[in-house]
Image (cartoon, rainbow, N blue to C red; front, side):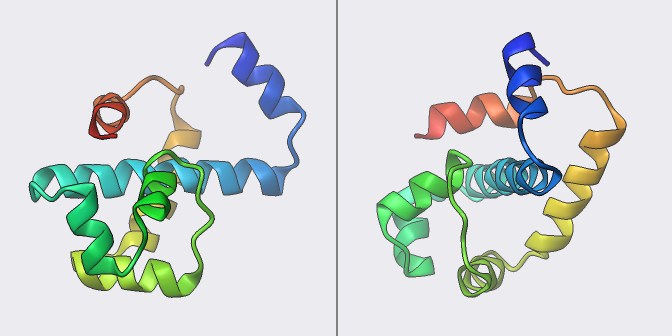
Length: 110
């Protein structure tokens, strides 16, 4: 973790840190699934009844989707997205943060 990220994280409340962790874990998981299924962001947006901007925000870790949106995503992709995201967050807290290939692929998807 870079010094800048550590300083920023130090200024955040536990609630803010957890929300950010969940947002980025959601972004990684959705990006992985879209890549595995060769689904474009636009196709995903249309099928999930989301705007292109909403999908972009989700994939960049800047979204705060409602439970309804998360339910639509989980149903569309036929995945347990909340379980995955939570397990990803818990796992990341047990190991040092390093850039993951999915994160790099996420940048290339947008």
